Image (cartoon, rainbow, N blue to C red; front, top):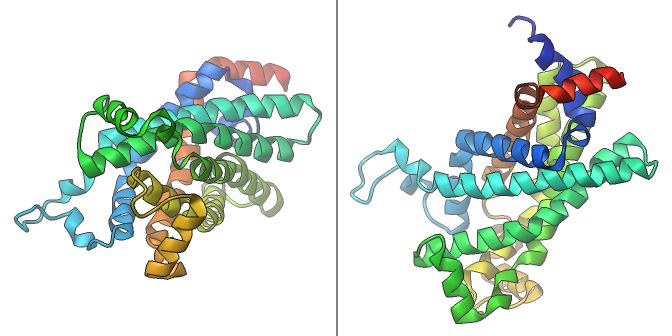
Length: 300
């Protein structure tokens, strides 16, 4: 391929990896997160479908066949609008909160690596609160039907307002590790490989994305499985608290088969999400926020 356009080359070299979220306002970070989240999910949505299908013990072939058994590849994209709303909203909170905490940590005199990783961890932790409620409603809607607005109203009516927080602890832990890996570890690894080893930027980003995905995927998958089971059983007929749910899943299916079911597709989903989000971030900043480039140029 040819040389990158100057704006894209500059952002990918400096701003995307080290300073992008710190140079944008809170609203701009939220918009950037929403745009990149929707774009990424539109590309790799089948991995999410296959992960959920395997976690439920259903054959993967059901995702591309109709009820009558005929082949229909568009079947795998059912539910994409809701998934885009969920990831777009979560990404918006993650980018906004991460930018806020990175600015806060940078003001305290912390080193840039610590600012990047620590800010992303705290941003992900904060995003887990709304993300948990959105996913709770999505899982309940998938299981029992209902409208987007009617589902949370039914949950509160049947189980009380406190039920909206079910699974929040696991979601916050999962999102903290996820965001730390996506907005902290992945671009940090990319930068180190380029600076120290002379790797080409996209190759380094791919390596960083896979490394971050393995870290986030393996550590957080049991959290994801426990959370999904808890949120699907608001009546606590089978799954109660976090520890009891984990023990019940392990006792029924085994530790690996139970808590790590669907891990391959989740790592594929996370690694492609990390790569796509960071790539789209590099390319959309100069398009959406050209003023940030001018300010960074002046600072340099």
